[in-house]
Every structure is written in structure tokens, then in C-alpha cells.
Length: 132
Image 1: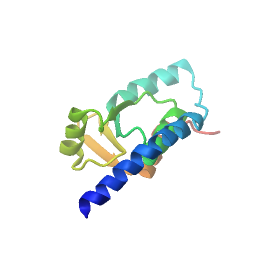
Image 2: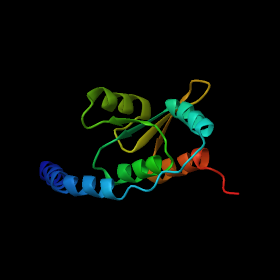
Image 3: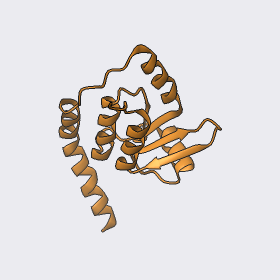
Image 4: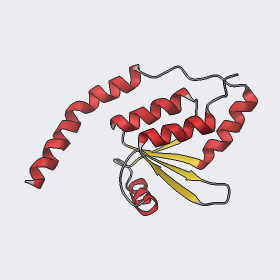
């Protein structure tokens, strides 16, 4: 029975994947604009971030849309296609669950942040420009 359930969801993902990718492409928000100095600082800060994701995961798409909106050059690790990224997620985060944002703090400590809403809140608090 468990095999049938897995097979069902695997087939469902394969059928829905093109639609999810099209949705992701056409629903991108407009990226925010920063001065060159501000964007350079954001670029430097993003060197400490990495998003572990699946291309067609709706929760990953939600996070990637926020990353695009905030104009963040965060590296993307596709754990479906990259066995090393999958292993790093399992060892560092404790489970192969996406999306997951790996944050390396200034003191070298790693934080693995799961849940798309929590990731988006973190990114907004850290990188969204203050409205005056």
C-alpha cells in the first residue's frame, strides 16, 4: 500500500510539474530597486545563505518569488538532482524537507531554517527596505 501511495504522488508531481514551473515563471513579482552600494551590501550578505529546494515544489516557489522580489542572489541547491546537496541537507538540517534556508552566521554557526513562511519572514526582516 505504501508503494502505491508513493507511486501516486510521484506520478502526480510529474503531471503537475510543467504547470508549476509555468506558474512560477509568469507570476514573478517585480524586484525592488536599491542603490549600487545597498545592493553590493545585500550581495555580500547573501554569500552566507543557500536555499535547498525542489524546482516544482509550491512552497519552494513561494520562497523563490520572495527572493526574486527582494533581489537576493541566494544560491539554490536542488536536492532532487544533486545527491551532495541532498546529503548536506540531511546531515546539516536533520531531514530532507524543502524549502530549507541554510544561514551561516558571522561566528560560523550554521542555522537551518525550514518552513516557507518562516523563511520569507526572515528574508523580509533582514533585507526588505524600510519604508519611510
